Image (cartoon, rainbow, N blue to C red; front, side):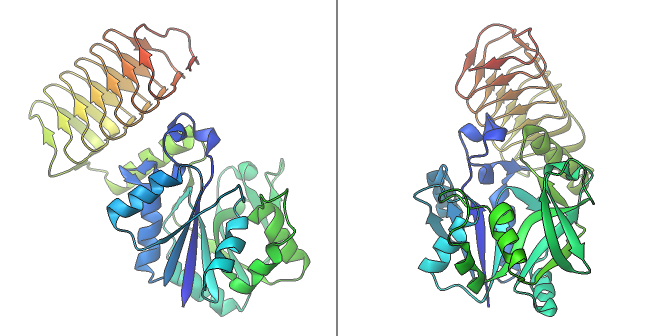
Length: 363
């Protein structure tokens, strides 16, 4: 018997403007919300009960759960609790299993949770933390390990002692949640900064599960772009076209590409190394490369989009050129508009004139 708690209540301020209109857990990876990957993996591992901890834009995740008919128990925080506070709250309100998997809702991974539980139980420790190797550990909590046991977590070190970091996935004996009381700054309590150090200092055995599969954090827009394009190349090296999509015979699709449900691509358009989300409409003679277009994007004729992220229901006029920029949900650009590199446009804005200055933020 194993329970699971998915932590999906954070602000995701570093992902703005993408996270201004949707919580991070609903950001699409290959046109599928991140939270669905997590829930699918837990479901396939036959976890007994899954609790979804929510706060910021909880209503949107609740609606998604309802529409997709997910068998989860949502728990909405009334105040900011950090990522450890919800563990104590949920354990006091529900009868959890002895072992509880805890998953950060802003991480993409392909962990086999059944294998993780087997490892946890074989080591006989009260807790297990998943560790993974990354190229730049300075952004994360670096794990100091003796044999298989966790000795210390060093948060965002300037000089990392190793490349092994906290992957944001844990297994805890539910009795440990009683130790969360009295931690943190007010009610906001951190697993990595508050809870785990207390466990280590009290002598709690914490095993480290070495995970070598795919793991990606989507903390900032460049991470979000990278995970999508890397997975695109891994999962669909020859490209993918939904059976409901309508692609002109005169259009050119250059692998890898992902063409979602009910997408329309018109004559002479070229799609290269890009993701076109569901119900997107690509006009005539467009050129789209190394970009992510979320659902409902509507692109006018003879427009070029390169290395950019476009949110839900963005409408782009004819003869536009958009380079290395991020457009929030429902942005509208008029015809003959240039958007120069590193531009950020907040949701619902109308852009009637070209943006020549690099790094401009349209509020």
